[in-house]
Length: 75
Image (cartoon, rainbow, N blue to C red; front, side, top):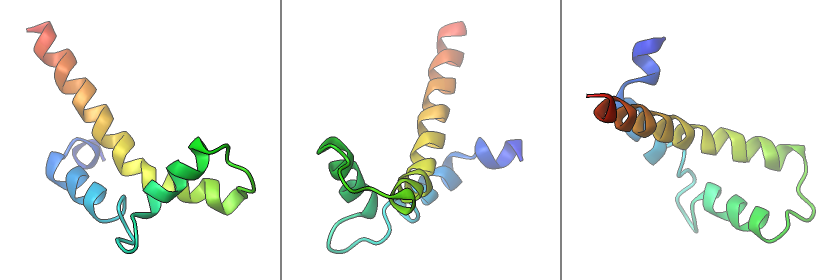
């Protein structure tokens, strides 16, 4: 499991596929984030679940970026 969450290529692939799907007319996560920024009026459980589902690859990517910066500073 550790190799899975630390694999750069796989995480970037997840961001480009699951994180951005569906691609047209706009990425799903982008629409949800705009909705949240606008006050999240009318968002139900499924909408919040969509945010978590489509946002999780980006959370993993941010995690990898933080780990790599911390390792570089430790050296």
